[in-house]
Amino acid sequence: MPVIECDVDAAREKLVEAGAEVSAGNSDHEEWRATYGDANAVAYEDKVVVQGANPQDIEALLRDAGGHAYLYFDGASRGNPGPASVGWVVVTSDGIAAEGSGTIGRATNNQAEYEALIRVLRAARDYGFDTVEVKGDSQLIVKQVTGAWNTNDPELRERRVTVRELLTEFDDWELSHVPREINERADKLANEALDDA
Picture 1 (cartoon, rainbow, N blue to C red):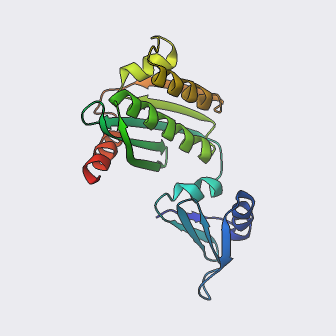
Picture 2: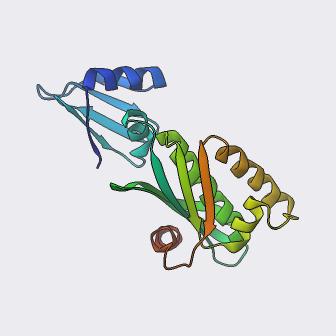
């Protein structure tokens, strides 16, 4: 449950501009309450407490933009194709800024890997990071996105285009292949999503 120390009046304005539903607080201590995406926020005197299925929906709007982040992504498929899921993590020098996971229906492992990459890039973009270092344990995805390998599969080619478009939204980016041990948190999130499905 993220706690954001901020000017709560300015935070309210940002949320209203983004289209959030803002209402009065439920007690004398609450300044206001807001709902945006899959997140809810409660404002107190000098902080906003964010809850919900995807707290990053609100947190991304209220945190100071900019800076550098490390992005980790992983996709999983049982059956290839079969039930598939994604896991992703955004890390800064302060620790984990955001993470997410979920099932994505039936897909191949490579399709799931691309979907995880797309989701982590969107999260980093929404948080307003300027530069990102992206790390994944799929050599195929890394080589295709960086242009070292061709992408013959039409579905993967379409996803690669989406990834390349998202990467242009950062001032600078780097994409590299890492061993599974380095990508452990994203891998765990993807597998837990399948286990819980």
